Length: 204
Ligand code: MLT
Image: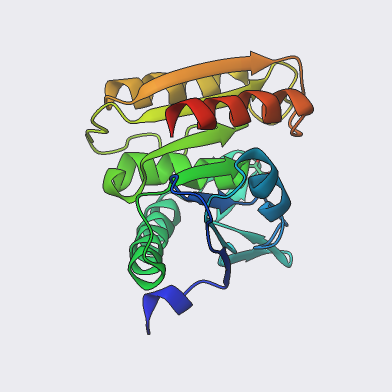
C-alpha cells in the first residue's frame, strides 16, 4: 500500500514558508479535530493531520493501552514506526519540509514515542498533557531539537512526576526541552494555546 494512504488524514497546504505542523489528536478524536487550532496557532503553515489507527470502544487512538495510563509497549513501538513511515511518505507526496508535531494527550504520547524511536521523523514537538510512552526506550539522539511540554498541575491522568520523567528522558536524548506546568487539568486551556503559539513562532 502507498504509505500516504495508510492513514486516513487531512492535508492543508501552507501559504507561508514555515515548518509544517503534524497534528495528533487525543483519544476519541479524529483527523479534523486539531485543524482549526493548528490554523489559528500557526497561520499559513501546512497542516498534516492523521487519524489514529487503533479503536478503543469505537474511539480512535494512536496506540493500544491496557488501562488508563498503562500502555501496550509492543504496540507503541509498532504504531510509532507506522506513523513515522506515513510522515515520510506524506512529506514526499506533498513536498513538505521537516514537520513539528503538535499532539494532545494520546497524540502527545505518540509524538513523544516518535521523538524517542524515530527522531528523524520530526523537527521538534509541542506535547500537551504528555506522559512517558515507553518505560525503556532505546538510546536516541535528537541533536538539540526543540520540544515544548505543557502539563497541568491538577491533571488527574498524568501525574506531574511522570511528565517530569518524560522531560528528563528527552533531555538525555539531547532534545532542547522547555517544560511548563499550568494551573489546569487534563484539558487544553487558553494558557496552553498562548504558550504553544508563541513558542512555535519563536522556534520554527
Ligand atoms: C488518553 O486518554 O488518551 C490518555 O490520557 C493518554 C493515552 O492513553 O495515551
